[in-house]
Image (tube, rainbow, N blue to C red; front, top):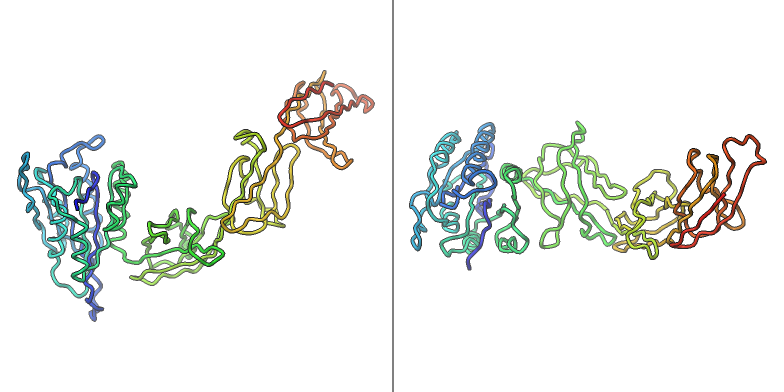
Length: 460
């Protein structure tokens, strides 16, 4: 099977010997990163405002400069497609070579070799990946990382999936990351046999994703956040998470929680040296403090975050009146959790809430339930329109009759003669006195009725 790669993709493969055991040395672990760099002819193609090779070279220079500042790092460079020029119907599928073997302070050597590259050949991805596994000298205290940068398809009718399978069968663990330009979901499915996929549609996003990849290459401490539902299953997702340093209060990481293709919480790479305060931005938010991570291991953080939904609709009004806000508060508290738009749906933690709909008049609802994985739909009547006209500037108040009592709705502006109000259906009274009249005897009242979706003229 031929594995299709979209343009300018980065495949990162972590290789670890299965039975290497734990090193007895007191020496710190060394991370060895082998860069496999695409020197095929297609790298001469334009990408946005520059050629792909120019962008990739620039990014490699910057990466070497950053790595040179770190301790316990060794780098090597393998290239492919850079030795034999490709012709129609003729290609060299053995055109892959270890140009800079592993060694200390190889950063400038790699920059020089990359700088001299003139793309010319084909794209033997699978073969380069296979040979790269042999580029690491024996080492009992090393983490081995391969970063493959390519812009083309597997051109030699070989299968990187089959290579990955073969390496696993030999006792080598393969954990790759794929970054491709504008790769759609269908294309990403081609990489399920290999591992994670990322999309880089611009030079800036390519840089950002490369930073993520390098972070994972240099730090093998991973975290999985399980957001538990009422059944204690990690099924809640699609919320933002913020990791703060407990000592300094500094925001260290921000992630949007997701479930992977296996419907499990996604894995993130995090610095294990800090103690964290995790804020999960549900409504209301969930907080967990004093989180410590075990370096070099996969850590799981579990929080109870069962969610359901609230939906607000106006009967017969479609998507109108979305300027009406629905204030959500935790039962018995005064703090506003959210001001949700009318004719919308949002997610909340399972629980009981007090709701105030800022229509005219306001509608207050107590003890509204949010249940696990259910959406509670709340509907109100369609407003009607009241056109209130006064002969002079004055003081105007509007009241609604409820259970035989006059309930204040709103006051109107003093320096207007005409008012247009959206009011809930019902019986109303407008009370008016001209501003120039200094006696309460000049008070005027007028009753009127508002029906759903209709307009009523009120002349004083």
